[in-house]
Length: 292
Image 1: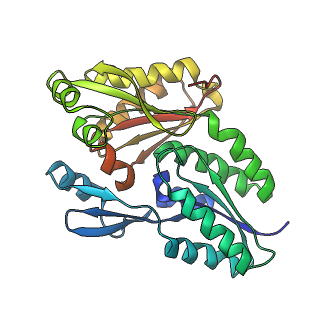
Image 2: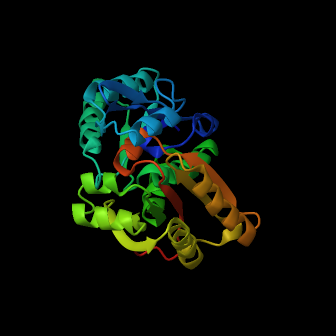
């Protein structure tokens, strides 16, 4: 079996520790905050997430960018030069055109390194949903699955990842076209919290609205109770954009109801945070009856 490297991008929102443990390489992604450009790395080397969300709440605008061809060449070529193939789990095509560049550069690299393979999978997942898929795949990778076996596993699992999240600041959804200006103003006044998900095509959709944070978080928990896999076997990720209290509330509710469940709390980075703002809380898991 030819050696290969498992790769993803930083929309996976997994910590440096987890990525290191799973031997997964994550490609950094660029964004602009105010007048400055940064790159989001797993170790937050260019800007700490707390600073990012503080500045975002203070009114600075954040704009994200797709991974450019030069970055893909750098990361892909480093592996191919060493005789390793690549399995790359990419951010959802329903939310970004990043995968188009990845596929183009992947084909170019295969031509430049005959006999080497660059297998790219559209995860149809985002943020910690992508992170959960990467985490589960990384565990299989460590067990020695071949590239083709692991690619088949990802294709099977990616449509079973259930994404549910709620946001605190409606301004960012309004700016992204998910809510109208009137909906954002009225919703903010009435403390309406939208419930969002990622559909089967990897697109972001508003599914429901709850009044108040606790009711919105309860909605996430109810979805898991209705469609999550057997809790004794489940791994879930609770993600947040500088909202540790909300994340711990969800995690503690799950622990009390499902003793032994594997819960990971992860901080969501600037690439997703720029579009949802501070205060978002997400619950992602594998769903036994996923049909959204």
